[in-house]
Length: 457
Ligand code: TYD
Ligand code: MG
Image 1 (cartoon, protein in one colour):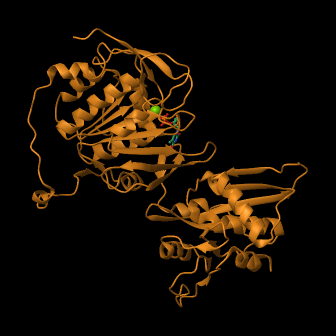
Image 2 (image 1 turned 90 degrees about the horizontal axis):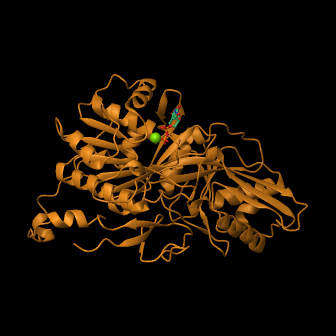
């Protein structure tokens, strides 16, 4: 066996270095290199047991008759099933990441209880809480009377031995991946080597037995799954559980899914009895809307396959500062600068000597460029002090030339808006007639100037 060698592993990206350095060459993070031995590192253990089994390549066409949908375990919690793409897939591994305290354990306790009630064998392994604590939480969530099996363990070999007893589990939840450690690796728990080796062992278990596994991971302040970002590449799906402090709703966002669509979201509301599903997020985000105030525009957005209406609020106020302030919550600040520049250059709207604040209501975060038009409308409305029509939604991308570009899913956005009582829409022009004869009025500006004229007269 090779002599044990020391190497330095970046705790952020997992790159191995032969020498210590202050900065990781690979990801550029500072102070992330930690000395880890490779004596019993990953690979060296299983290698000894490896046998030379021969594989058999198959051609795609011969498979045509055998393809089935991935076998899924449905929890019955609609918003969770939506985010996973229709339920947990047997034999797959899912990573659920989120800030500490955001509600990951709560969500998974509820999911475990729901699945156990449907007759599945569910094992909840916690490395962070004692069994009594998990039971207490289950009691608070009204889930204490369900046959979920609880275990407080951190060693992967012990966990595998524990769940090997009895019927094969359908779902194994590991809370959290940062607490796991395996005899196969000799570095401390929580290091990248341990996290990776433990995840690998559990994924191998899932593939060989057909159980679905869920790994819980804590996210660092920078928004990455601490250290175990490496795990993201190993698992079949990655979900983020997010929410703003002070807001009572939580979003489960799919960022990777080998068995279904990404960009899906599940929306939950927090309560003292646990998480409640929010089937119509638009109603939640539009909940406390004041329709008379200038500077507010309703954006008809999309989250995956689902339309979501959300209010965008702008405040444009005279500034005593030489360099006026630009602050954004819930949107891209570079994109705001772009919209301001287009308004100044092509529409003659001046924001110099004005502070500009932009906020997406409810602490929601938008990543779609389709929000451009709503942002521009909110900005112009706040600057002029003229409120926008209360029954109008806005969507459309703005190009640097000031043209309004079409965006996908216009019909779905309009349908959702109509459902919630909006009679008008400002949107990009498309070939078809959007007025449709059902009382909806569509304003289709060709350029941003047209919209400014419409708002400011
Ligand atoms: P927890 O699920 O333990 O968070 P995580 O596992 O992500 O660290 O939840 C954190 C705290 O929030 C916990 O004290 C319970 C509380 N909580 C509620 O009271 N209601 C809820 O709906 C949720 C999600 C959490
Ligand atoms: Mg937890």
